[in-house]
Image (cartoon, rainbow, N blue to C red):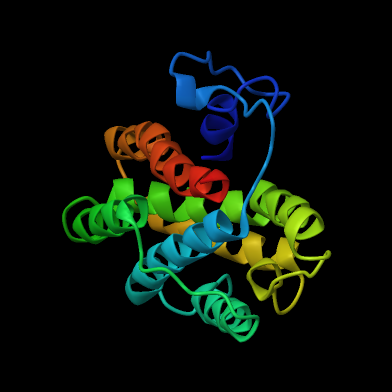
Amino acid sequence: MRFVAMKLHTRDQAKEGEKEVKEPQERPVAKWEPTVEGYLKFLVDSKLVYDTLERIFRNTGLERSERLTKDLEWFKEQGYTIPEPSEPGLTYARCLEELSEKDPQAFICHFYNVYFAHSAGGRMIGRKVAEMLLDKKELEFYKWDGDLSQLLQNVREKLNKVAEGWTREEKNHCLEETEKSFKYSGDILRLILS
């Protein structure tokens, strides 16, 4: 799955990237100017997505919901108003619920991409936002209990076991869902700039 995911990046994003920029929202942001309000929207919508994933798959070692709850509480203590989930998060959460019931291969693809992207590029984005807006405060969302590499490897092994019994068509179907996963996640990520 990583191979397919990396190909969907542009060359600017990853050396393995092959994606051609076609839509305006796919272009790199000319000037990265996050806002606290936009970041809060991103965190709230991300929490909704993680809540959904973690209701379906439990005890993976990669859980983020509880940590996001702590981060949102911290923002509240700082005097910020926590927004309600917005359309990108609501849409993605509904999609994940539906896929978990009707299309397990597609759901696994989304699960993989959400968690593994957060563990890589998501942490980098979190550091940038922390530097620009939060006086370098590292949020709980970007911390794990234990060795992250090992946690990811454990999940990767479990996902590979699940996929062992899949036909070639089912495996291909899982991989084909990667682009949709990127679109939904990108819609939520762009909230940082709103």
